[in-house]
Image (spheres, rainbow, N blue to C red):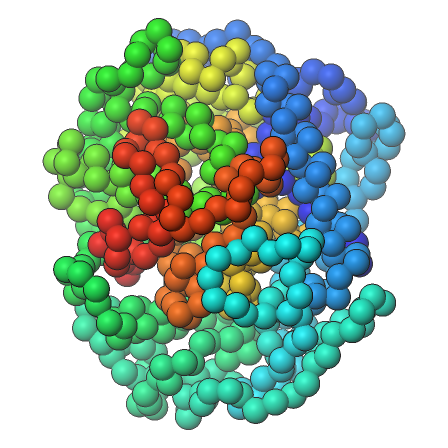
Length: 593
């Protein structure tokens, strides 16, 4: 079975060697950009200015060779590794990746026509799951899969032993030419709620502080009940209703579990979705962000010339640690603490009295530019960028993705974060040829956004999120799918959440993406997804980790342990890995609404 996988910004893996695709108006011929990353769009000084402000643009540099060499090697290794594993193992029960329009050859020196940028790439194999869902078994039965062996030999996981099904129970296993995979109908190991509506469980067992579970027949949740995809209709999954019900089950689990220490479900800090905040609270939040950008840095100006503020210290920390906090065992935990430290700085340094909101980008997946979050008023997170006309599609070579321009492309033109220089560091990995020479060079510029539904509509939908939470029971595959290493899932919810910020935006830069405050709300949403997944089966998932301390274990490094110390640079003190696994334990005391 062929695995079409890639290291996706995650993150911006398109990153430094993503090559813009330039199309002639009269042909479909792609012009090859081989050794030098080149931009096909020139943003005029008018578009990049806010009123009378002049934007300072650093000289254009190709990405540093070490970035390209390191990531190129790691990505090639990852793609070969997963492809080999999937072809030789019967443990991965994925259906073949599917797209509605296969791109034609257009890489390297082939000189072929570029792929259709509007082709619908159905991420996470949702189309297959959806088809299978149409004929799912009754909710009183489930399927068990013999998918228990590990990928690639030795297993790098800490946590309770479990099987590793890579697709949810209730879906027919595709035939495999290697090994065997059995699907045996058995009785559900734990009782399901007794009332169903079109196969969907109904609950009415409200709990304090969160509202009740969805209305219906009153029932008690089994302590061992874990929701499955087949519990919900397709409409519920695609509309977000299923995710809300799953979130309620997870919250119920958190409230029921024994409490250790002084943090409880009731007294924990509550993070809410940005749009649920009052206008006053939204304004207080963005004011605190601007405050943090005015707090002088304590960093050495010689070593860190671009670090001017406390806010910049967070960007510099992410730049410095990028290669050891992505595709690693501590990817999720590191970012959990990173945004917690930033949240506390807003509170303790700048007097903010609220909590860090999250951005539910699934709600905006089809049209992020129409979102209230980016409407540009004083209670938003600022606008989209000024629209830049006449831009070409961009081809991201490593991910084999060609995407059209977004709805902006220039400076944020209204609302918070508009009107002048906003970022001082980066980019380091932009595919548009404007990268700095050195990691911490001073490069003042406006905040650029180019909101793009190409990414969010394919990878950040409610179906994507629900499939991730309910379809992956093992941390290895959970974090792999989240970051974009499964089937046709080239970005995952994490990478696509960055790239929906658009091509020439701060959000898409692998190293310096915290330059846009949306980074922190995006990662709060990622953390929320992880927290829900953990809470559904805390016994086996709370402390489950998998991997090492280097990106894709390159260079090879020891298996990460919960007793290991994790560094946070300017952001905060070193922390013990195990103290970062529980939002209601260790150093944390927060939960999501």
